[in-house]
Length: 421
Image (cartoon, rainbow, N blue to C red; front, side):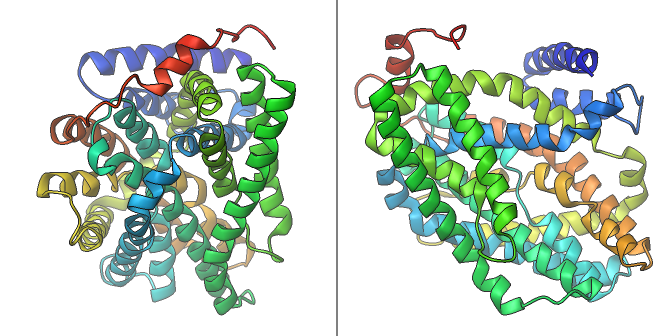
């Protein structure tokens, strides 16, 4: 397994360099490395690595969401909070409803089977969107209208909403007892409980850091470990109290940024270094999940379903941005930034198929759902990453600088303690 990780790192860094030379986002190269080395093409990766792939993807996702939390200030959320809530729910709902209706016609699925597909495809990929938005925030692009911050926050909430909806639909399909009202109420409850717990943990952490003053690298290790434990808490509380562990992780960064800005920038700088490795693991492991043969089987009907869903999502985005300060080009950027599929589709794309097998049901619809989910990754993750970078660099205006950038100042003023544990 260690050899496979070493090979992934070397090949992914090489692919990242080559793709950047061609002005294409490097994550596309990492994704392709995973596809080629994965079990569905060359089958070169060690089986043990594939077994722990889900855990590795989770840790990488935690790293990027922690970085997101350390970039969202209270003032920013106050300015864009209303739009964030609209963007978190309306576009995903529009896309899910469109796919539910179209799936019965184009794929021959039942209404509930189409709804399962819609609940999978309706999620936007934080692994693609969040790093891009953080880059724009560092470069102050779109800063005057808080566009990257708005997209970053909305994309994170969008996933939680979609995953909850998916679990409800799967339960209804396989005949499990599902309290629909409780599940619907559980969406805002899970967000609120996640935020409250995250704020409490963040408050305790910055006070402990003030008292004991550990190195920034140790602070990062503590944050990642606590975030993993919060995800574990989410599963322990499942069925009792709705709780969003990933939202808690983001809230930790928010409260530290609010109370100790310099400390937050130090931690964010270290997380950026950790992300260099986490990005390779995340996208290569997502790529390894892509079954090219299954994606091919989805065919033109699958492409049409994905396209119709994206059109509906785009309409939802434009609806959310009515009466906003954004011009037409900036609204188109938000639309494009809200299109990539990857992480959630790789994580839950096979869930309906597994549920059907466990229930002794016909698995044909589950295979179709998985095929279209895989196809959505293949089509939208590379294209979306490239389009976000290209359009953002052209459309987003650089905001006015208010003195020296606090993030860079924190990096320069803090000791480089990467080798001190």
